[in-house]
Amino acid sequence: MCGIVGYVGHRPVQDLLLAGLEKLEYRGYDSAGISLVCDGVVESVRAVGNLSALREAVEARTNGGGGVAVAASTATTGIGHTRWATHGRVSEENAHPHFDTTSNVHIVLNGIVENFLALREQLAADGVRFTSETDAEVVAHLVGKHYDGENLTEAVCRAYNELEGHYSFVALAGDEPDRVVGARKECPLIVGRGDGESFLASAIPAFLAHTRRVQYVNDNEIVTIHRGGVEFQTADGVPLEREIVEIDWDAETAEKGGYETFMLKEIHEQADALAETIFDRTVREDGVDIDEMGEIGDDVLRAVKRVVVVACGTSYHAGLVGRYAIEEWARLPVEMDIASEYRYRNPVVGPGDLVVGITQSGETADTLAAMRLARERGAHVLAVSNVMGSQATRDAHGTLFTRAGLEIGVAATKTFVCQVAAMYLLGLRLAELRGTLPAERRRELVTGLKHLPHNVDELIAAVDAPIAQIAEDWHRSEFFLYLGRHVGLPVALEGALKLKEISYIACDAYAAGEMKHGPIALLDDATPVVCVATDSPVLEKVVSNMQEVRARGAHVIAVATAGNRDIAQHAERVIEIPHTDWMLQPMLAVIPLQLLAYRIARRLELNVDQPRNLAKTVTVE
Ligand code: AGP
Image (cartoon, rainbow, N blue to C red; front, side, top):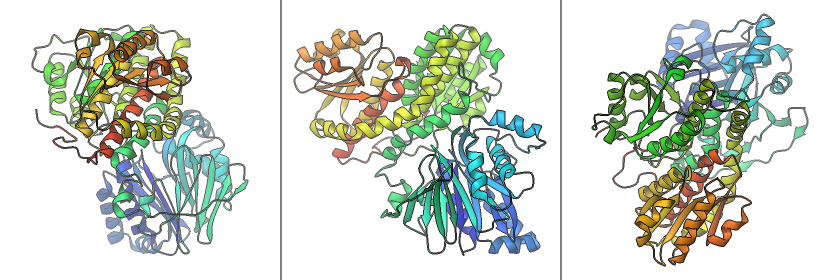
């Protein structure tokens, strides 16, 4: 996730951009940059590190830059970017803004251009020399190629029509000093309207200090901001009307993007987070490519004899889902352990093992210790992490990054679905290298993965209100039981963990088939039992367990696949998730359970972002 901002107006833009980027830093923080139109010439400053590094670079230029510095300090049109690397390592060359060969057109981009390799080859054949490894630079050259020096909007439309993927970008050109043009395809872009000035940004907080009047840019739209106003159009040039909405957020709400809590904001960010994690790795139709796993290349993966997953809490649950995928698709044995147990049980591990340490923070003490132990004993160690530069990424031979963006709520939500996605990518890659999964099945799974962000958006919009009603009806319960089978089991475990963490209600989660070996004794007519009953080869078995629950007078709340009418006969409440490949369902089925825990905790008026006794990152044993 990156943050982008643009401005056209009458005020010096340099400080406005830096202040706006500061509000977007949560979206990415490995490098940043700005470009300003100064007397018809575009000047750019980029720096590796967080925003203070960019501020220092800007100050250094102001103090030593002579005429350039003077022009920059009075410039009133500009764009800026804070980066969370996806294509290309963290370096000044890869930092945004990117520019065309004449350095006249500059752009900043958030998201992923899926067909960038093909476009890069075409542009290189036309003589373009690239200065970075990014997909964003392709967009700069493409806009530059279509730009006639007079109509930047037209050039952006023509470039947009050649791009595939999931992105938004903002462009400016030295030849049109009072104009900034944005394009949106499935990544956020919002206009802020001031008096004689306009803003474009990935999120409202970037300009909220200056205006509360906003216009939302929809998918497949091009927007041009200039001193005189704002124009919306389709990529084919058809003008569009757009209402101005007044935002009444206070500073705290603004920080949460308008949501009442960080946790709710992060639940709603899951489609974006998944798209960022999946898209550039699923460009091929029948397989996945994970290019950036350091020393864990294809030859290492081919030689793996066993996979061992170590993790804690939610990350452990993501590992459990990954186990089903790797065993099913790659036919490799997978051993799972809680990191705090693994590190003290003198494990048999060594060459031939791929040890995967899953940790969103990359700093969990027990997971780090388990990974180090495995490395000392000769295993290859892969980190699955959300934080660049974290200890896990430094200790491992390679890292498979989730790209969920900063997660502030203590209860993990978007990082869980991205960890599951990362494990699925790993499973598919191993399966392809080992020849254990036919191309047709790989194609089905890749197609399903790519569609998931749309499924997530659809799901959240549909289920939030019914879940709030279920929470209303059941929030006084003293105990909940969660049941699931196969990939539904880790979903049940994760749903129960969410409820424990933020509502403090006692609950247990069990393999549904194990219920009659003990937990069934807990059931009475006051017990709500949450059953993950999505379509799968084991659904019939889950349904029998639901019948057993009801026979004891307890109440079933089922998470089921849309269209399966039978489930309603065995449950008091049914929450439907969109249809997807059954192996991919955990990434959808967990979302109603996050929301259920959330709505119950809110109903109990608890602090969901900072639950008692918990810390976001556990750096002690
Ligand atoms: C999740 O909601 C919890 N906050 C917790 O279980 C967490 O997943 C665990 O501490 C592991 O953290 P990590 O992913 O940063 O290693």
